[in-house]
Amino acid sequence: MLEDLFAVADRVVAFDFGRPIGGGTPAEIMADERVRSSYLGVTATDRPRAAAPSTAGPVVRLSGVTHRYGGVTALDAVDLVVRGGTVLAVVGANGAGKSTLGQVLHGSLTPTAGSRVLPAPVRSSLVPEGRALFRTLSVRENLEVAGYAAGVTGRDLRARIDRTVQWLPERVRSRLSIPAAALSGGEQQLLAVARALVADPGLVVVDEPALGLAPALVDEVYARIAHLAQDGVAVVVLEQLLTRALAVAHEVVVLREGVVRAAGTADEPDFAAVAERAYFGSAEPASRAGTA
Ligand code: ATP
Image 1 (cartoon, rainbow, N blue to C red):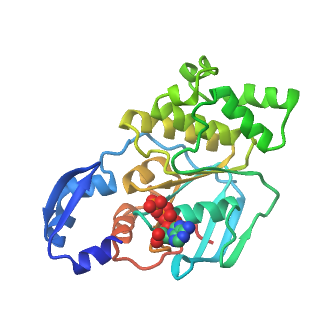
Image 2: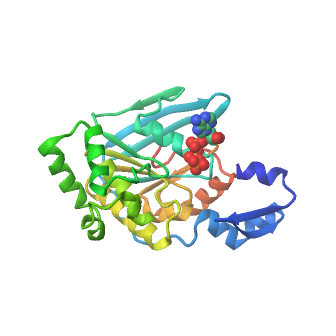
Image 3: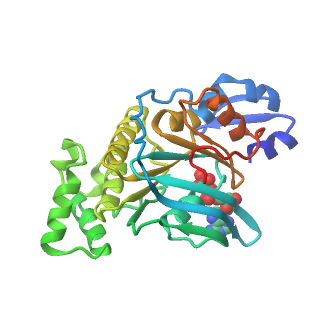
């Protein structure tokens, strides 16, 4: 955890993609623009977000969710509401609990304590960190496997895949028979999301969609994810960079050490500053947008 590191270290060296980008005392590191931009993402896209629909109802609601792996508390008393037609970003540093929260929202992990309530039946899809594509299978076969897993076959599956591929860019749509491994990183990420869409979900959780992608591709991936929300899907993205989260999401929840430290929208005055303090460890738990 960053604050633990800053509490014990006399000197800190910060790395970005394997390159040292700054060094000094914890205070100097915290004030270093290159370090802040690397961790907080000040270079993030400024693509305008769509306005959140005012009528969006809750799709999933977490109350008092705590999860422990043995002695490690990954989530601690998390309250969260995800609404249809909305992009909610859960942002936090490594180990903050994002993936655990994503799995609980998706329903694939039963938390140690607390509840996950779906006000109405909804299909949920999770796009895992690292994409988990079948690299030697073709683009179409990856989509077919997702269909089989969702219990869709035959004509229904073909129709589902035809509809899903419309969400992909033309340069992927026109190459459905090439192996997934032959796609670029950004295209593979889009395929991973498309695979999740074959199940026709009302809730999609995408774990770190920007990981390892060049900035232009990150913008494209997020722009297409935003389209899902415009179609009414509840979208949750798990994201490390705060400014990217603020740029792309209707609602932002800052998670640190398994606790929701701040929640709100980029449009709220001062929320960016509140969220930044929460990310690094100097704000109290919050109960604004996104929380119950
Ligand atoms: P990252 O961005 O590094 O994936 P994260 O924010 O997604 O981090 P989680 O992966 O949810 O965080 O992990 C939260 C905490 O739970 C961390 O301390 C992590 O080491 C621990 N943890 C996660 N999965 C397991 C597991 N299967 N067994 C034990 N501890 C785990």
